[in-house]
Amino acid sequence: MAEAQKNTNHKVERVIMPPVDIYETEEGYVVHADMPAVDREHIAVTLDKGELMISGTIDESEYNRDDLKYSEYRLHNYQRRFRVGNDIDGERISAGVEDGVLTIHLPKKEEVKPRKIEISVH
Amino acid sequence: MNIIHYGGNIMYTTYDVLNDFFCGFPVSEYMSDYPRINLYEKDNTFEIHALLPGLKADDVNVELIDGSLVIEGRRDRDAEKNYFRDERDFGTYKRTFRLPRGVNRESISASMKDGVLVVTLNKSEEAKPKKIEIQ
Image (cartoon, rainbow over all chains, first blue to last red; front, top):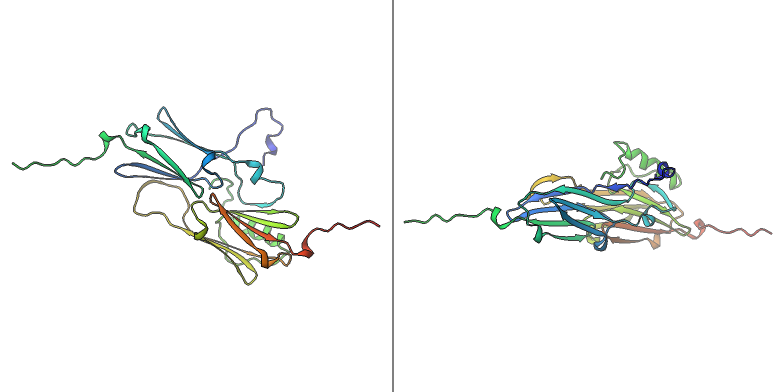
């Protein structure tokens, strides 16, 4: 499928935008991204200037091989960016990979978490 | 997944190609889009790769039923959560492939790594390539 690009000097990199689920909890936000065929060593999550970037590196030669006889999918490097709000505590972001699914926890800053105010009875 | 978008007619594509490829046997009536598969052929083996992100080996069933290879799995979304994006695919995954005569049914193996299932089918002796000596 890269044939169309062979004759150009500048190589256009194909990337896959992984599908994601995002939900909010009281503690923060959770992102799940489907990135099959990528292991922990080949995934990077960065936060820079309010932009969260997910990237995964695929060894294309391993998947888009010559002996491929029939194909319903192609694997390429994964990449996706999100803007995150000011309510995220960038220092405490954590991420893990399991069975080709990347999970990122984005905790909210303490001051934006919902807090129950005790009503004192006089 | 937005890797290759086939629109609505992936069924026909799959049907035609696999039907053709596996010696013209009819494929099962039941076909779904998922999991997406790639088929590789080596001298002595076929490999079916299926994308099943989020599934563990225990969540996937690979069975040989009446000459057909059935790949089946299920993944459920945690419905309790307050989603504001829900792009991933959930539900039942099932694909059925009619195996041709050239596949050795006794030596089918499967493995699962990083959300990719690999089913390895060995060719039977008569289906392997043979070099003919020129006299």
